[in-house]
Image 1 (cartoon, rainbow, N blue to C red):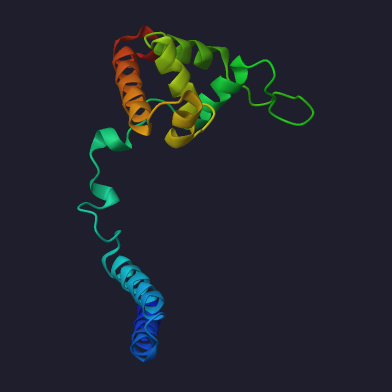
Image 2: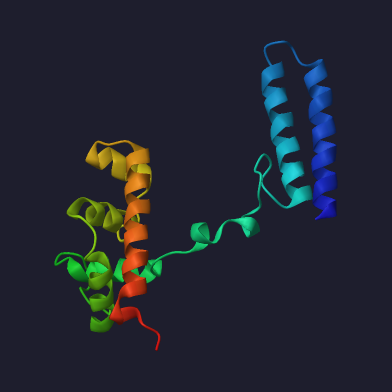
Length: 167
């Protein structure tokens, strides 16, 4: 890693020299290159994205925790659609088990129709918040709030449900 950082430092020095010699119209391009190199060097030296207050290892628990395994959610979504096949030949191997399907349906039962629709678009179809917002003609923050509300409801349902008891 140190060798890579040294190479980036050398490249940064070269870019800064070129910027000094460049014509006025080209200086912003060289400046942008130097900025990108500084950013990469800082990231490599600190091990975290520059400008963030916390590293990923210090995220709050609720930011790392997911209510369901994303792969199980995708299987659930696919198992609820008649026209969605797993493979080209129509074989639904690795389909979700009936037990998992019942557990997920129980957890999703507390959501409103809109929350369920948005949640399944995000977790089942793996659409980005931006794409969902465009499809539903709402803001991205509305989608984010809806997902957060749905996850809180699901989390509460899971903690109270017999389907998810560990004992």
